[in-house]
Every structure is written in C-alpha cells, then in structure tokens.
Amino acid sequence: MLSSKYDVVIGLEIHAELNTKTKVFCSCKNTFGEEPNTNCCPVCVGLPGALPVLNKKAVENTIKAGLSVGCSINNLAVFERKNYFYPDLSKAYQISQLVRPICIGGNIKLDNGKTIRINRIHLEEDAGKLIHKTKTIGTLVDYNRGGIPLIELVTEPDFSNADEAVEFLDKLRRTYIYSGVANCKMEEGGMRCDVNISVKPHDSKELGIRTEMKNLNSFKMVKRAIEYESKRQIEELEKGNKIIQQTRKWDDNKGKSFALRSKENSHDYRYFPDPDLLTVEITQEDVEKIRSTLPELAQDRIKKYVEIYNLPLYDAKILTNEKFVSDYFEECLNLYNNPKQISNWIMTELLKVLKDKPNCENLNEIITKENLVSILELLDSKQITRPNSKILFENICFTSKNAKDVAKELGMLSSLSDEEIKDFVKQVINTNPDAILDFEKNPNKVIMFYTGKVMALTKGKANPITTQSFIKEILPNYLKK
Image 1 (tube, rainbow, N blue to C red):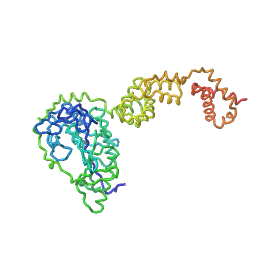
Image 2 (cartoon, rainbow, N blue to C red):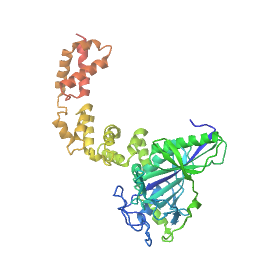
Image 3 (spheres, rainbow, N blue to C red):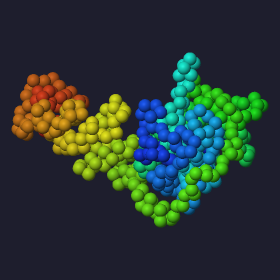
C-alpha cells in the first residue's frame, strides 16, 4: 500500500509496429521471424549514399490510428533525425518526428470516467534487435527489425496508478487491432511501452523528478514495474534522498528495476529535419477519405453487445478482447439469433481449446460457425442433452465432419416417442420404489434421481425435460397407492 502523503504521476510512451507489406523507408519486407539479417538493404542499414523513400501506407495507417483515438491531423508533417549511438541503430540516428508529428491531441476514456489525454502520435522507424548471448559470444545484432514502421503514442502524465495504465494499454491495443493498423502482438515486440513515473507530495502542484523504464512488453510487466518504481521513489523521498532523473531497466524475473543511464532530454538528441525527406502535405480530403475507412471499433462492439444483444459487460469484454473472436461471434449470430447461448459456448468451450492453440487466429479452424450453430440448435430444440452436446463438440473439433451427421452416428439424437418415454419412467419407478418415500421431503432430488435412471436406461436418447414432466405427472399416482 502506497503512502497517502504522495501522489504518483505516470505518463506512457507506447510503440506499435504498423501493418504494412514493406518497411517505412525502403522496399524490404515487413515480416517477423525471418532468418537474422535477411530483410535488410543499404537504406535500412544506413549505407552511404542510400536514400529513403517514404511508405505512403505507413502514413495512412498513422492517420487512421490517430483518428481512431480522436486526434487532430497536421496538414504538414516533418521527419527529423534523432541522433544517438547504440549498436541496434546502424545509422547512428533514427528518422522520427518531433516538431510536426502527424497526429496531435486525442484521448481515451477509462471505465471510471477519467479521460487520459494524448499528446501526439508520430511515425518513425524501428531499430534493430540486440540478442544477448553468453559472455564468450557477446551480443549479436539482427537488423531485420530496423526500418519497420513504428508509431509512438505519447500520453500526458494523467495516470495515477498501475491499473489505469494497464486499462489504457488494453483499450489502445484493441483500438489498433480493430482499426487494422497494427497487430500488437506483444510477445513479438509488436507493441511495447515506456513508462515515465514520478511522485510528489500530495499538496504539491509541482511534478517530481521522473524516471523512465523502457520496452515493457506485457500488461503484467507494466503493472509490476509501475508498482515497484512508485514504491521505490516514495521510500527514497522518505529517507530524505533525491530522485535522480534516469532511465532504468526492469527485470521482471527479479521484480526490480536497475539504473541504466541518466535520462536524456530532447535537446540531447540534436533533432534536425532530415534533408533526404520532403515535408508531407496532408489535405483535409486525405483525412476524410481515411476516416471513411474506419471500421467498427472494439468500444463500439462492446456497447452494441451490452445494449442491443443484452449481454453482460463481462461477456462483451471477453468477446472483444481479440477481433477474430468477436468476428466469429458475429458470424455465428448471423446464422442463429441467440447471443447469450453463442457467447457462453465461445467463452466456456472454444476459448478453452484456443489456450492450447496460441497461434490460431481463426476459430473456424477449431469448429466452423455452421457446426457450432448446429450443436446449439440441437441443444436448444432438446434433440441432444447438454452432456452429449459437449461430447459432440469434442468429436468434431479440428475436423470437417458435419455436426448433425456425427450426432446420428453416435446415437445422440432423441428418437423416442412420448409414450415410450412414459413407459421408461414407469419402469424405473417400479424398479426403484424406495425413492418414492422421500418425494414429499425432497421432491426435486427424487425427480432428478429418476431422470438420471431414465437417461441411463435410454442411453441419453430420452429428452430430459420431457422425462421430468412425465415423472411429475406419474409419481402422484404412485403416492396414492
């Protein structure tokens, strides 16, 4: 528990790699997982004389990302050189934006009603990747990632705790995915977060000295890092020590942060306009054309699921966590108008299977929407029992089999007439007469007992609802005897 004497002030810098076929200033492929240093060319590794050419799709995706969070779009955007030396930056500068970014302003509203202001979104090139080996081998550099189009969203210091920061990241991730600008696969580095943290006395209007933790690539990591660093700074102040402005490394295994270097300011990077790239002119017509392509976003679907489909907010959030899951839900809904039943099956059955298939991004590969709907229709029409519906689901997962055909093959479909079910009810009552004695004290227990016996005797072919109604109808006659 943090001391109430202090306020924690947090700002985020969030990087996301854009969905484009090629890199931002050259024609190298924008793909993940290739052999090291195979997607490189003289431009993206900065060889002398190589000239960059701006990727139009990257600019369009940046504009779309900005529009999806309420940003204004600059009519002129300038690219600058951010100068620093680090092994993963082969040119010793990064092409980025400072003075005139593509997107300015915007905000995202949290569930508690708090609005988090966005300062800007700018487009830049990603750096290469350092691969730390043993002390003998040293550190290797893979430049495949160098030059991939990267957008950086910078917030105002509006967060007060780790939970708010994580909620913002979650909402932003969904927004980027639904708008189609980025896949945000954090395990692949597709979305990463730098966290700026400071603490100040509760009654002070002046912000404290901040520290920055870079390249946090999971929500859990962000939460743990913020909580640790907030506590560390408060403890330092309580001891009478000063906070040093610095960049710190978060070690998630140890649950601690460590000082790396003193924190730079923007003037340390000696920004200046890149002489090889022209100013980008963005007309209002360009902006409106891109705005017209914005799809239904996650927050819109959540609202629709709650207000129109009457789903609980919990269900709506689970269904929209991944766009391909939400798309599958809507595909099923087009075939069978039972939102809650479809939602229940996706959340309890399909997502359980999906956990073991982390690379699957199409639920139709697990079970087609037609087959899932067939199971639900059989279940809702009482042609199969709930236990059998789950067995049927397991039998057709990852197959091209037809659900109804498999149900017939397994003998699941109810084929008994009402008279036949009545005969089975009388049979189990006659062979289990002692249970009747408990009927007045515990009627539901007795009814469920006889229902189970009928289902076992008919191998699940009797309709359980019909069976229970007949038990209720027939039992009173035995009580009179």
